[in-house]
Length: 222
Image (cartoon, rainbow, N blue to C red; front, side, top):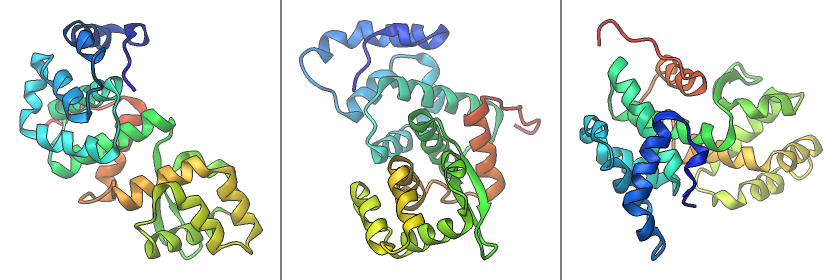
């Protein structure tokens, strides 16, 4: 999906998008750009993005992993990366987690949270799911056990596979049916894209909080 109406943006984002649109709108009318083409158009449209040049390949690769084709998302991702780069340390794991957390938050309006299952084990979870069921520790354990065993299930069939495996557990089946979208999102980001790969809990929560609140205090050592 390509957004051509700059009324959906405000402030600097609107200026950036208008600039991109003026340069490329005629091109959009004749063909559908792929992820790399759209990303390059946006990245090259603003001088400030040159500060991210050393991470350019990783940024594009990570976006391609999500299969997102959306100019507005790319602009928000790049601007958040710029802000983080000015105030915090940056490495490949941080860049990747920032991008994935940002895209997930834009698409679902949900952030991540660490919670304990019934064995006292800590897992990363999608905040949007927390208020949807009562016996969360049991259901969380069932979900995680499934994901550990089957971390390469087609994302479109995750809900069907979960229901098939726990068909006699009415509570779990209903939970899956009621939350198909978020379960697929959680499975995609945690077990296929491995959003927390290479990061400790504290660093990931710092990234997650920044994406959720937009607040990032400058590190004095930066």
